[in-house]
Amino acid sequence: MKILIIGNGAREYALGLALSSDSRVAQLYFAPGNGATETLGKNLIASSYDELLHIAQDIPISLVIVGPEAPLLAGVSDLFAQAGFLVFGPSQQAAILEGSKAFMKDFAKRHNLPTARFIQTSDLNEALDFANTLGYPAVIKADGLCAGKGVVIAQDAKQASETLESMLSGEAFGEAGKRVVIEEYLEGFELSVFAVCDSEDFVLFPAAQDHKRLLSGNKGPNTGGMGAYAPAPAATPEIMDTISRTIIAPTLAGMRQEKRAFTGVLFAGIMVVDSKPYLLEFNVRFGDPECEVLLPLLQTPLLDVLTACAQGNLKNLNVCFTQQSAVCVVLATAEYPYSSPKPVVIAFDPPSPQGAHLCFAGVSRSGEDLLATGGRVIACVGVADSLKEARDSAYLLCKSVHFSGKQMRDDIAQWALQ
Ligand code: AMP
Ligand code: GLY
Image 1 (cartoon, rainbow, N blue to C red):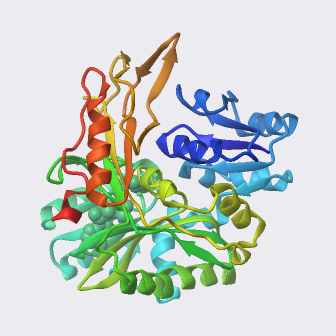
Image 2 (image 1 turned 90 degrees about the vertical axis):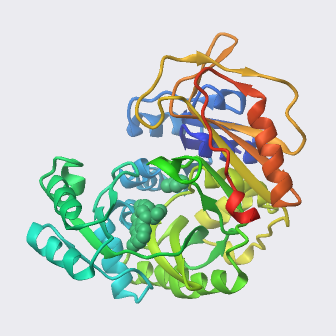
Image 3 (image 1 turned 135 degrees about the vertical axis):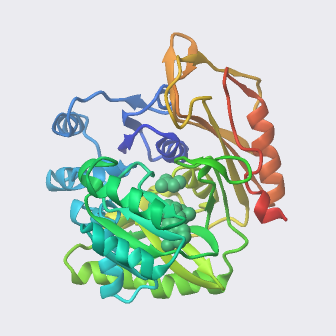
């Protein structure tokens, strides 16, 4: 079987790594991939999705996996599905759950999903009045995709007014900010919950926790994610059952009812307040770095899970997970998340400690060298029988990777071990 993975991050590397050990997989292709995905398969260069479609037809590819949100929102799943490919990833119509926070909040209201009180509007006065009614802190969210920067927790009326003005005028995020959601601030702990779905049925992965802030102690700016671990001990069976019943199941039913049937990964950002889960946001893909800790826990071959979702027969598949834990620590360049540095050579101390492996993201190849080209460079993943051992081996692996300006958090998964 020849498989195409669209994307270029550590998430796509992790998907490729999990598939590469499956004897049914004859060849992996990445588009565009990165300097390390070439060791798992072939990188394809295409100047448009139409061109990529033609390349995939010539190969021919049997399964297309779409990693990031941007191609999903651009309708890449539809393009390939209409051409007869088996595709893992939601349609453009379904990807709106991530593409529009206003849609997602209205959907939550229509289907009685537990979520923070809100309004959505493009009117400055209406937005400010509602924020003042809620009191502070109040949460302001740009409607569209803003690369993880579209959420502001306003501490007072002045900050709310400045934020709303810069979003609604288009100054902050262009069209994506000209509509906003204003919502109640929820205080609790966060979980990332992933359901693989075939539009009717779904299977939950063990819950993960991300670390969005750049610096240890949850300080510094928000990033794509500096580390993750799973399973999160805070996600008790009762909480996971409530998330299944009150959030995931009604979402799949509601999406079918609204003719936006959802297949692929539904990623629910959850805030647990006094043991009750509330939906903060939906994403329509695996999280990065969450994917890197979830796939090693999957016992059932990933290929079977992805094809069952794409073919609509998930209910006939028994999806099992190991009892292990996984921890992932992201190594980023010094300038992350602000700018990209000059490429620098990465050096590795062989061999990797047992139970640990690397997933590559911002890297490119130059002859024999692997270069760090910016952003999140490498995810160091430890997998073990306990969270503590998994964490220890992830951090041991971090020490064996060297590049100038390397930065990482030193407190990934610490909260769970206290
Ligand atoms: P989102 O992209 O909607 O998940 O928001 C990004 C981050 O903002 C979340 O991971 C939370 O840390 C925070 N956040 C979003 N909505 C709320 C809320 N209603 N109350 C408190 N924090 C929130
Ligand atoms: N780690 C968060 C995300 O992938 O959106």
